[in-house]
Length: 584
Image (cartoon, rainbow, N blue to C red; front, side, top):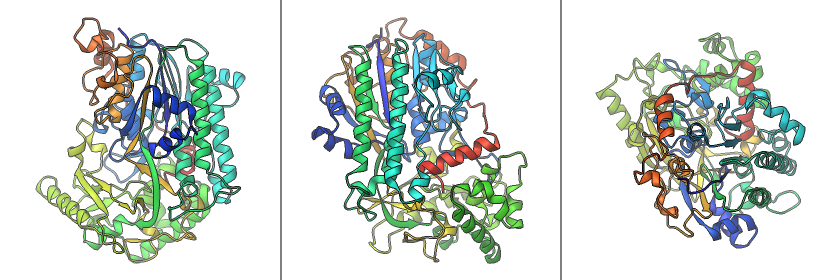
C-alpha cells in the first residue's frame, strides 16, 4: 500500500544549504522555508567525485557507478585512448521510472540529466541536457514536443550563456538563466495539470549553472570577487526565481501530496590556483610527454583551438598539424568532436614511457594506470606491478603539498574497488582522488599543455591566452553534499536522517509509492523519515511484486544499448557542455 498517492520531486542541480539555509531563515525563499519548517531536511551525500552524471544516474537507479556504468560526461573507448560522449543509453540498468511504470504508476519526468534518448514509460519524459536539442526525439511520446510548443512555447534545454560571459555581460547571462527557469516552470505546470500523476519530477539545472559563474558576485571572500553590474546578488536572484517556481508547482498539486526537493551535489567557491596532474606525475617519473618538437606542435595547435572559443573543435582539422591530425583518425567513423576531445586529452602523451595518467578534466582529475592488455600501448603488467604502481601514485598524491601554504593538496585516495563494486567497474578510473580545499576554495584543474611554466601548481592569470573568458570566469565548483528536503503527510516532521546518500532516494521513492525495490540497489529506504514503515518492507505479500518481476525481466536488457551521437549531435553536446562549463 502506498504511503502517498502523489509524489512531487523537484531537483535543483548543485543546490547547497550553504546558500539556501540562511536565505530560508531570512524568508528570502518563502516556499522552500515552508517545506523545511513542515518536514525534514538534511545535507545529502553525493557520489565520489560529486559530478552530475554519476550522481543523477545513482539517484535514478539506487545503484553505484560500477552497477549503472556511467562515471562522467565522456567514457573511455574499450582498448583505446579515445573517449566518447555518454548519454542515457550508456546506463546499464533500469531506472525507478521504468520500475514505477511497470507497477502501473503514471509518471512524468522532466529535464533530469542522462535521460536521452527518453525511455518509453507509462507517462511522459523530457530528456535532460544530454539531448542534442529540443525536438521530437528528446521527448516521449514524440508528439509531446509539438504539444508543448503549441501550449507553452519552445522548450529550453539549458540557458546558453557562454557568449554573454565572454563579452563580459553577466547581466545578460542572468536574464537568459531566469528566462530558462520561467519557461521550464511553465512547461512543468502545463504537464502537472495535464493529468493526475502518481510521480512527477521536474529538474532545474540553473542553480548549478549560476553557481559556477556567479559565485564570485555572491562571496566577498572569493579570490575572484567582483561587484555584479547594476548591483545585487545574482545567485539570490536565481534562487528567488526557483523558489517562485517551486511555489507555483506546490500550488498546482492536490492536498496531501508528498514533496521531495533534492540536489545531486552541493556547491562552493573556486580558488585561484591551478593544478596540472600529468605534469606532477611526470616529475615523479610516472608520465612522459612526447618529444619537445612534437609537443610544441600539439601545444601550438591547442592554443589556436582555445583562441577560437566555442567553434574550436568544429574547426579543429583546419589548425591541427598533420602529425597530430593523424592521431585523430584511429577510427574514421567516429565523430569529429569525440576524436578531437580524445586528442586534446591524450595527444601529447608518450605511452611507451607512461605508467599513470590523468584525463585532466576541468573538474575532478582522476588517475588511470597504463595497463598492458587493457590500453593499446600499456606498459604496466596486471597484478603485482599494477598494484605497486597504483600504491606508489597513491603515496605520492598523499604527500603532495601546496608550495605556498605547505598544506596537503589531497585529502584521500581510493582504489576504485574500495568505493564501487559491480560488473562495470572498468568504467571507473583506477584511482579516485578527494582533493583538499585551499582556504575553503577548491583547486582548479587544467590540462598540462596549458601550463605557463614547468611548475605543476601555479596561480591562474585572468588574461591567460589559452582560456576563453567563459572558462576563466568559473568561480564556483561542486561539493560533496547537496540538499534533501522531504515534506507531506507521509513524512515525519524534523526527522533525524542517518547520513542520507543520493542512492537512498530511489528505494525511498519506491517505498513512498508502494512499490518494492528490486534486488541489487545499494541505497536504503530512509524509514526514519516515513510516518510508518511500508507494508512491502514488512514482508506483507503483494507489496510491489510486479515491480520485482519487472526487475528480473529487464535487468541488463534494453539498457546500455549504446545510442551514439552523430557528428552533428556530438558537436551540439560539446557546445552544451562548454556552455555549462564542463569542458574547455
